[in-house]
Length: 301
Image 1: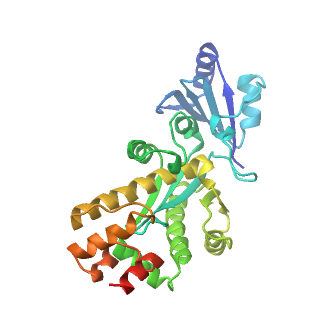
Image 2: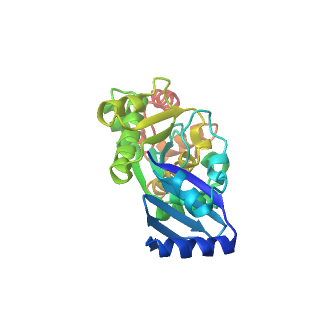
């Protein structure tokens, strides 16, 4: 079973460790924000410029006695991030989230992100957090960076595709979400093979877990509310939000009008403005046609 431990080393201790691992025949590789990454004897040791040493593998306990003299480990920043009790650590975990579910206009996006153990320090050195706590400008900056540095899978439905997907899912949003989360996590599992995934809960019946028990029983899926507190889910929420915002910008270009986010007071005037420019039949191409506010509006038009 893989284990991950983190240690704090001085520059001199890091230099000494590198020399010892080199003498032991370890394979060295370059790693962003790291002094070195060394592989051998069943472990991967990543020495970051911050002074954090992340060691992963089945023989970590014996390894750190041999090379660090039993030095006490420390928790990486990622493991001190508040998460609901009972969730897996950020290391070697998938996070999955969606965006657009509650917006009248626009479609739906779902994203899953994988966080390898040797990339925890990189993730935690960034400003990655729940996308709901970040402004859109920061989201647009962080999303490309996450996509460049972490494995991810993304599904984007424009409004017309969303409405068709909703209908094909027996007019059930949760079934559609289950399918999209399942596809994203399964795609990443085929790449990375991690054993844990965290999903922002959208149904108390934990449907994503049920899907995976039937086809990938070794993968444990945790479905919890406010899961964005888990760093892997936070990263996924940022990519999903960025993709949704890009979709809204495309809608605005395509239909020559500004579409408000959410489902609040700006939405009814926007619907009225839309049908003045276009037609009620076109509402299914820009909005979630089953939303009650859309149905009430169309009934009066």
